[in-house]
Length: 259
Image 1 (cartoon, rainbow, N blue to C red):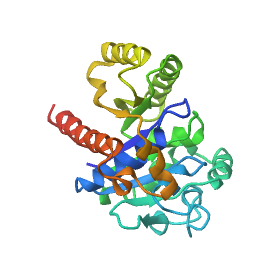
Image 2: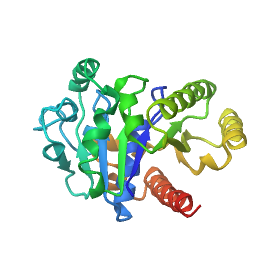
Image 3: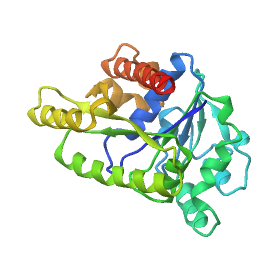
């Protein structure tokens, strides 16, 4: 069964796109078939895997509006086995158009059903807000991965997101669950980081990934080269951390299936 993971947090700057790109690349290295879906109008996940959001022949927005077939929009990432659905500014227009459509929150789910059996993992990079694009991602997904920094305001945003997930689960997607919280830009030398990390471990227990993502220069540099960290510097601490996360995601999924 395909695992569709929405990488979401209503707070910006927490590492959603970095996680989407590098988790996808790491799963591909472990021989999993991966599709990365860029649902953010900023299109950073698109450029982060080497695609041009301005020159892509068919964009995700075209597919969501029913103007193009999803199979024509999927692109293979250069020098990689990852496939991508390019996002960009046109998603803002698509969101506006979708508001006038019937069953607008199911648009992404309906188009993904035509290709989901071709993949082991579909990773959806969500916008940093609860808009119709994020709602579409949560309705299409069976799991939510929440990247967050270990700081006070991140905890406030987490509460809001948990409420949103519950609302979607009760109204549109009964199978949706939070599969894990990921500490990003984590510095264990920082007292606040450790305190927040301890609170997360106490309240979320096995939902908190053992893997944490450190602050890492190579991880920050990689997007400017249109590459995941593994392809930019596979020995960097950031690349190794996302490889560890991919292995943990697979282990947790296997444990859920066995339960």
